Length: 430
Ligand SMILES: *Cc1c(COP(=O)(O)O)cnc(C)c1O
Image (cartoon, rainbow, N blue to C red; front, side, top):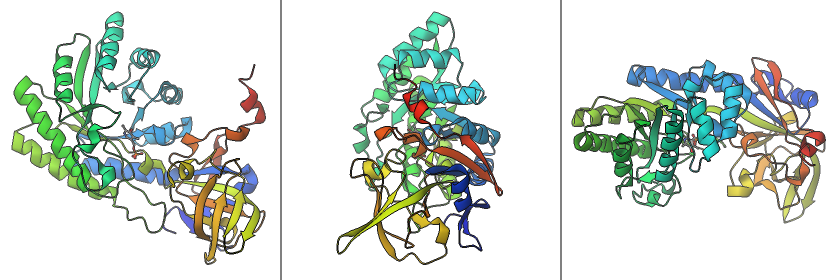
């Protein structure tokens, strides 16, 4: 299998971290999210080790928890030495409930509410990533009220749009996140913060996109940001202590995805960081990255029970499953690619062309014209690399209960999030 935590057992079943997925489906029901703890920990260690190798430890991976947020994951990544990033009061609350020290929580988001900012400041999070001037004014006001000094960084648009693949440097100015470099907004915000009484600037932050399979945009972002650090130093005599280069590293959804080992990104960016700091005589800031998808994406699979198979000659074969856009909206949102495997017969050749149909009353497809083993009613179908932005994006559309999350490690499984019940769904109806 193209993901190393997955294998085919002697019984022909799909295994994840030593657990038989057909048995997991039987024990916990379907649809079911399964997360390999071993895989998550392995990725975390690779990031932590990369900081030792490339920055003598003067750096930090931060888990962007919007990819998959529940108590269990915060415990695992923090145990591996990562900080966590949250983008809402709900994620902050979950991280705090999971026991994450506020000193290891970074608060981000493009439209934080007054109440969310109060919550972040009252809980003394490590820093708040400021998105715009009016937010800055709110942070200053709330901090002044409480007579505290709040550490902040600034979300900067470095003018690199990795999504276009041709590094258009100005495209990114049209983004709802942060302040732009090229029109001077970022500089004037830095200047402004240096004059505020209850806010202190630790560094800058950028994030150039997601599911990126190229090194160059990351290197370019680091260079652009450090040129800006030099500018800030020369004009304002301000030395920024940290530089957060964001997340976005691509993962394998299919056999054909050409992923780059995380170590290669880290090495190339580190080279650029060291060269730029030398060129400008800058003290190397503490470098941070903020991966989300790559920490949890490949670790997760989703298990479904196959329902009816509708073969329409010369049109297509619909394979209906008990999940759908309520538990994975990514195909409906942007035709995201996934690999499906019939878990009962994972070793057999995948020569049946299927369109996987969810149960929501919409077109609701999870994949079209994809190759799987010929499925039968009642068998278990697995979707691979569903650890990121699936559980996190799930809804109750059609009043479907959201699936449970099971964590597997070394042949053992445990429930991390129980399945939603109809009572849960009704709980807020008065
Ligand atoms: C979404 C996001 C991330 C994580 O991106 P991935 O592609 O999941 O690695 C990191 N930082 C910020 C600011 C984000 O918005």
